Image 1 (cartoon, rainbow, N blue to C red):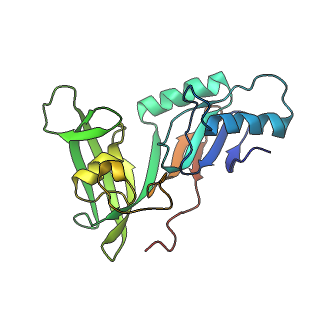
Image 2 (cartoon, rainbow, N blue to C red):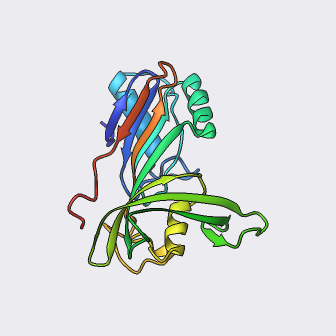
Length: 219
């Protein structure tokens, strides 16, 4: 049986807990990825002949762990994509960072420019830059590190990584954005897509999917 951590499955959805170091989707190369593993799991679990319809509704970066939602039908995919575009969902992240942010709760508001495989905070009005809002709660702080609960007010490329680094609180292990520290292994950063809330594409029931907390005991 393919190695996948199933959080939820029905006829319309498959929700997996992605490990660090694994691509979410195929990259056009032979690299291992979660979507191919998921298709293989469905074929084996349900004894399905032929091709399997399965598409990721959203992605998380290769070094990030956590919840990934897949659609098992084209109707579910269309409805879930529309829900994502309309912001009819809530994504909650956990991040272990160096330093601390002001107050128990707060928000980071920046302008981001997407460059070569990274994002950069730039002055307002910079051509091509887009507004980025990140809301945070400091859950714990100890020995120069903070565990943050993050809810995004926008969905920009590498938003969490770039904004926290700009605030002098880089994510542990995120060498691309200035962290000198190591997390679990060289292919990981201390960021987890911990919880996803979204309406079921068919029943319209509010669904909440959560991955096991990887930061228990980290501080």
